[in-house]
Structure formats: structure tokens, C-alpha cells
Picture 1: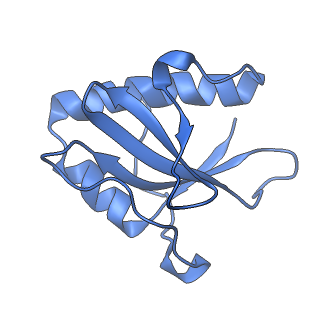
Picture 2: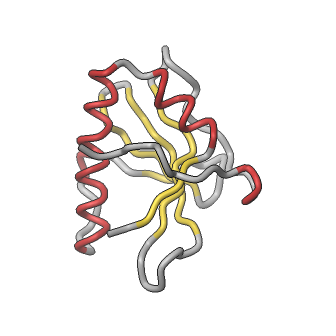
Length: 116
């Protein structure tokens, strides 16, 4: 399974989502993780695309108005993909697109539950 971490603003954004929004986001993450784990192409329904203003950062759509930004990070376990979550939200909950910060700006993903 891929490993994960979150930038501090992602955790703040996630906590601003309603329970229904978090549930929908978690469902999309489960699909995303399954695709990464099995090596399948990421489902087109997640509408993953590059963020033009931030090279190496991608946007995933988890609801009609819900988006999350992420990037691949340095492998934490040899041969296992590592995902860094940047932002998550809707137009009313938070701005989603944010450029990546240096390693010192990243928080441990411990305590942030993304699935289930």
C-alpha cells in the first residue's frame, strides 16, 4: 500500500469539511489508493490532472465541487509510492491549490485518517 503524509494546511482543510464531505473524500481516497496499490491507471472519475501553477502537484476531484491537491514524495519504503496531500476542500471551505513547501513544512500523516 502507498504511504502518505499531509501538509499542515491539508489537516486544517480536512477538519473544515462537513462529515458528509469527509465521507465522500474518504471514498475517493480509497479508490485512489487501490489504483496506486494495484498499478491500475487512476480512475477517470477522479479527474486527476496537473496543477499548471505548481509543477509536480496534481488535483483530484472527489465531488462536483470538491478537490484535493497532492504530489508524489520520496519513497519511505523501497518500491512503495509515497503521496503528500497538500490541500482539500470546496470553494466554500478553503482554497485548494497551494504550492508545495519544503520538507520542513510537512507534517506527519499520523493521526489523520483518510480511509474507512
